[in-house]
Image 1 (cartoon, rainbow, N blue to C red):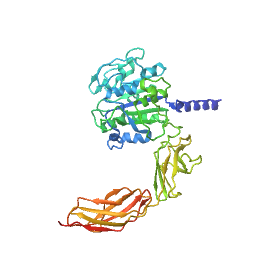
Image 2 (cartoon, rainbow, N blue to C red; image 1 turned 135 degrees about the vertical axis):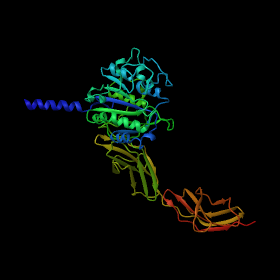
Image 3 (tube, rainbow, N blue to C red; image 1 turned 180 degrees about the vertical axis):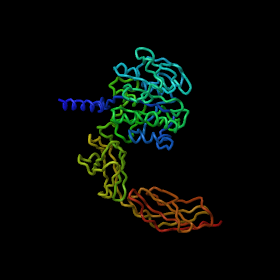
Image 4 (cartoon, rainbow, N blue to C red; image 1 turned 90 degrees about the vertical axis):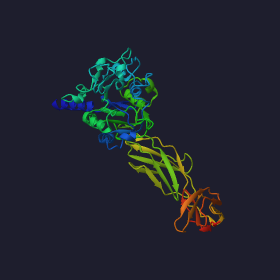
Length: 470
């Protein structure tokens, strides 16, 4: 009887720590915490020596390399990620009052819990526009105060003393199902430095980040907007138990993040989230995304390369000699993290068609779009090159083409018949070239080659001419 009770208790504990079944491709975490940062582009954060903690966290979770804010300035973006719309707000004005659908109201209407934690908020439920380094423009869920989608003032909390990570003993199980954390204007990098924001995150959020990885929970860190220098390209990180660490290249914005949170908790969709695509490829058990393939031909070789599919354990390469003729059996298998393959079993002059897929233990992605390449032997060289000075500043060249498979002809020039510099790239059918802008009373030496994807021909004979003094 004791053993049976112990077994049942163990199963119950495991169930609490295990991800719930996916809803529309998104698993349901027990807790979701969204941290909003400010006004820095992706390239200012990712790879920055001023943000060592953020970059270490990016390696522990999913980093979206093509994440974008929706607009400028700050407040409209906060409204976008919270309600799927800027609610007609195009500046950082305060106050406002809204009654439209929003994430907080959706969570509460579903019988779940919602709260926000704003650093510097002077009191629970405060509607003040500014107070020290606190700004309501970064806490716009306060504006949703009108039925039928009002959020109770009691869920608008200061950070210090209310966020569980700031209360002893720390107990992250007291977090609501969904919450937003908003550092003050210094610590969110708006007025402070990247290093200040990075240090604040490590001191205040890392405890939850590490806890989330073993307690079926999720941390999202994103930036409201960039600094107007990178087309609103911002960093977005997802860290949690259900997340497959890696870099993900799909294009996402605040609406995709909102839609993903809504799907995680089985909620209806607010505003533009209804037409946004949820993020489904980062979760443990997800089939990896389809790679993007390119093919480049050489002399008796085709070099393939493709984009990384996060979570993939390997890639299948398919090959055919007719469009769409790659067949169902992989031509080659490449183990991750490699993202290239060199096909040397090819014949010059034959066009080869390729597709690639990514796979892991959960399955295989769709195949990439087709890429084709035709390997070639290098062409033969031009012959009978002649050079004639026609003025003090011009020499005319002429030659005979011998190649039938060239894609271009290169002209090289020297004044010492030792060191040659390329001066022209001509069509493959060219047989003459006029070299102008020369110095008078100077001897110039010329040689040519032909080239294609297989390489360059040997050089032609060298021809020379001397421009007259007068």
